[in-house]
Length: 119
Image (cartoon, rainbow, N blue to C red):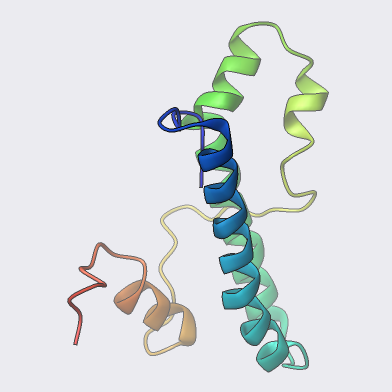
């Protein structure tokens, strides 16, 4: 979530909004971590994680306006790139294996949906 253009309301209102968002993340994320913290994973899951990290790097370097601004204005490249994950992977024309958890992720969650009115 980016707050670059949040400029409505007083400082106190904006700060209260930021705190509310932050507290909501904790409330939503903690149960997921508690449920999954002991889940085992293997090489397939690790490769998928590295691939998705690569997609994050792609987004940051190509589309993120903060990263682009820093690079275009002569910012310290090392400082700008420190936000990137230390290990990533790329795969040309990646397609998950049919019926795998990764395929289900793409099929059900990584496409535009009307989540509010979903059944």
